[in-house]
Length: 426
Image (cartoon, rainbow, N blue to C red; front, side, top):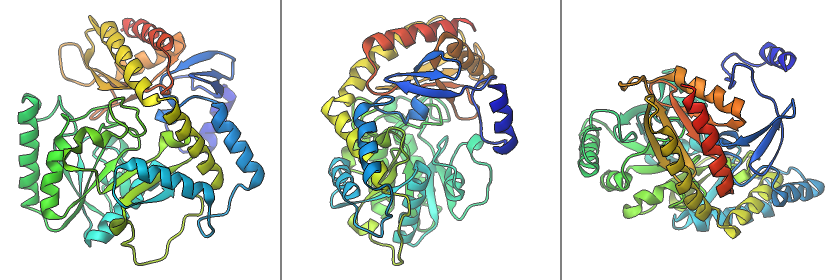
């Protein structure tokens, strides 16, 4: 393992982060479990950053990939592509966006990059509103709008970005308000901000902030924002890269918790739809999607193999009601985690919904982030046979729990017990 780590450091950039003091090589997986190069089994509560959405080595997906690869692997969007059209039809129907068009990419970064291109071209403006504590990808345009210093390595950008309050309920200047007052204050801030800007293209927002530590506003905040945006002709981009496909349990899309003013103008997705295959995409109403006045294609977006994986994975998700499973098992898991965190002084908050749960750690008795504690629990959980993630705003001090959506009750109980043991090491 050390040999592979040395080889990694010799050829991979320093800024490509690795988890754990002794980095892990995962060699194979099945269901909700993975194995390392030493043959040790782990319960996977992070799913390759919320990407292994249904299960590791899901037979329906691996069979679809193998069968499609045996026919043709690649053609590009210059040719008609039946799996791409079929998946686009299904996603357009599920999106809630009327007269929807779908464009496939290879990642969430590229999906958000495309959404920014559409919004700025449609509106003839490079001004973007984004949320504080947000994360939207690693490309030049998406790091420029990311509201999280730890993931934004440059202040240079082709876009002018202004940051809005509201993505984090329990921190910031409005944290002491009740939900209704919090929403009113954030809307008033948005109204005031728009009074100082020119022609804004779009607001981009994650319904639940992923890298930011699974933070979210009160339900309905983005609906209230949407009413303001509509008066100004400003588009709403819902970044569903981590919240889509039923992970939150209560809704198929995260925007539906804010759907009182209708669906977003543009929706971006990635991660879970491919169950590990590189699939991302953008959904927008035809008027917006078709606004580009230059040719474009995608060499690898919409690949026949990744589309076959997406179709099989989406079918499995819907046929087995994994959204309902996320709601039921996720509800049990968050209660078990809350019980496990009781009496742990470093735990500031347990939050989330469905199978998207965050545990924020601070220095006991304060609101100061505690990244050392988060790193220690991450290591202890691994030693116990549990893989989790971490994230957070001003510092990486939130544990992120996001298992595959097929998680069983017994696995949820087991994972909560392993996590409790790791937390007790603090």
